[in-house]
Structure formats: C-alpha cells, structure tokens
Length: 221
Image 1 (cartoon, rainbow, N blue to C red):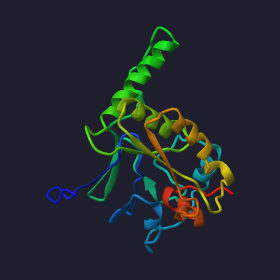
Image 2 (image 1 turned 120 degrees about the vertical axis):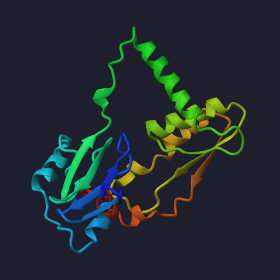
Image 3 (image 1 turned 90 degrees about the vertical axis):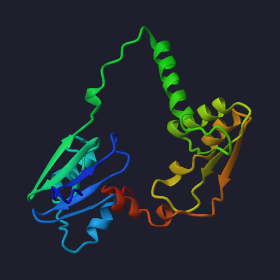
C-alpha cells in the first residue's frame, strides 16, 4: 500500500507457488492467499463462472486470472494487480516465454546441465553445519531434492521425513508413497529415514473439502 499515491499493489511469485485471490467492486478491495477467507466475507459474491468450471474440468489454463467464482480473480503468477482511482490493472513481470530456448548437442548434455543446476539449487539451501532435514514423498521433486542433498552432504547426515496417510483420503492409496520413499532412502547410507506416525491424521485427511476451499478448485471423488 502506497499511502502517498493511494495505490494498492498485489504481487505474486514468479512461478505461482502461493495463490493470491482478490475481489474488487470498484470501491474496495478484499484479498487473501486462500479462497475460503474471501468466501467468508458476506459482501463477496459467490456467483459461479460456469465456463471457468468447465475449463478446469478439461484442464484448460488459458485464463489464469479467472477462478470458478465469476467476481473473484487470481493475481497471475509472475504478475501484479494494481488498484488506484477505482480501477484495477494487471500485468506480468515474468513469464516462461522470456526464457531463451536451450539447444544442446545430445540427451546426455541435457542431463548433465540439469544435474548441474539442481546441484547448485540444493547446495544453496544447505547449511555449512548443523542438522539437515527434508520431506520425502514418492514423487520426483522431493525424491530428487532429497537424493541430491544426501549426495552433496557426503558423510553428514540427513533426516528425511515421510508421512503415511492413516485416515480416509478421497484419492484412496495414491498418497501412501512409503514404499517409493523407502527406495530412495535406501540408496544413501547417510539418510535417516523417519516415517511419521500413520495414526496421526492431517486436517486434509479428515476434511478433504478444505483443499477445494483454499485452492479454488473442485474436490474430486
């Protein structure tokens, strides 16, 4: 908020890790990083955008600023929404289109380049001393980060945590990735693998509808 210019600016991170929603009626602005906070405000309309709902169901992403609610919008990833004098203007400060194409001589060169950049990214987050921990699921992202950290740490230990869902989950067994996580942990002797108590359930397990509220997307059964 710039009080001198009476201008409100909402910015979002480049790749859109954190959501940012807003409602603007020409006079006032309400914004939040979770959709259900906006929906809790009585003056915020809940009219559904049927076209956006259909887009979501088929995976269309051509309208990143729209949500399934007609009058609630999303600040675009790598972009901003500026409110001043009763107007709202959005713009992008970064997009993937701004990255120049990379052409290497063969597949091995791409693998080597990707490894070099992943090593640099993980190394930038490793402390020079002290304990190091990571979240380890069965997915490529956390497995890649954990394995890279373990290799870079050498003789230093790394504690990797895997949570096993112990309550009803709308996605059945898909979230139980203990076996895949265990395969990664077994590759590095310096990984201390900790499986979080499966009897401890997170809120998303007992109330899976909260994911729809917070992310602005329908819940699948």
